[in-house]
Image 1 (cartoon, rainbow, N blue to C red):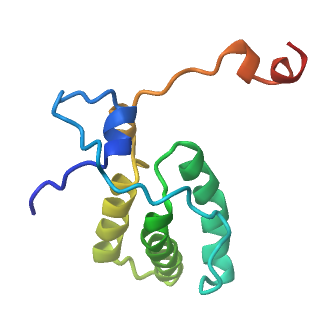
Image 2 (cartoon, helix red, strand yellow):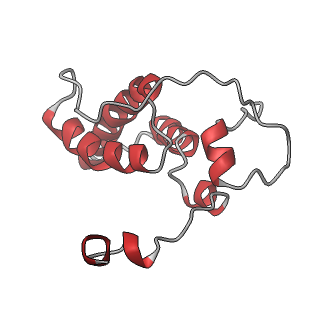
Length: 130
């Protein structure tokens, strides 16, 4: 399988380590709506509600990526169900891991992402009182 290009948001968060030109004309699809889609089961909604705000806050999840996160949440709950039944679905596990990497949610993906540390004013009560 060929290596897919990394999304510009992830490359920027990583500091563009390869120093390759960035696609500054990449489509901007807007901030994602973090409300869980109605087609998700209750278990998938719980997973969505845990991940979506985190991904939006990090700047990775955009409106056009909602379908990928929907598929991941559905696949994750199916994986948990199969594991609970003692039937480990290795193919599904590989697909879920790939989706995680696409969204920058694996340890290896995070090692390539650089974020600013919160300043004192952004941390805790200081943002309200100082």
